[in-house]
Length: 188
Image 1 (cartoon, rainbow, N blue to C red):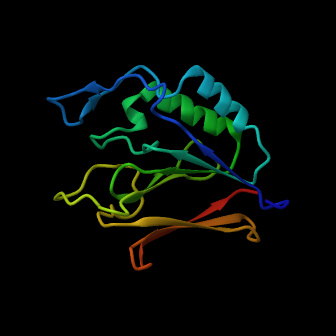
Image 2 (image 1 turned 30 degrees about the vertical axis):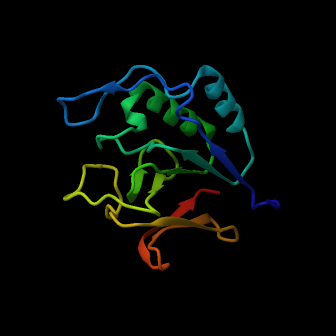
């Protein structure tokens, strides 16, 4: 983008080098914690280089949720050391960051409110063709707002002229109505 309106999008491949998930047939989650990694060492080095940017906003895309720690499906927290390494790398970058994730058939905002100069948000939006139809809800101590169990898509609006930089995230229904939204402000 033009000066002051620079956006960098980084998409992570969390499958190619990922170590095998450890099934947990008798536990509350589908997988046991794994001390292995989701990314190969070459990916970690590449990511560290990509985070050396002067972009005003960086969007990090992950096929699986980065922040949500408790649901029973595939997530970064199945690999707690890798998740800690990622969060440490993001924290040290000093960048204005937003995480996008999917693969859940739900929509939600997960927010980590400590360790960064602003709340780090993982915006999960997946379920354009179908959504979770199960009863009840699931735990996510980092959830901000409701768990959306309806077909949805996500919209990101960046207000480049705002000081501080402002981003509006919306989880929308198939008719364009808003399920939920969140406005973020980033330090200058």
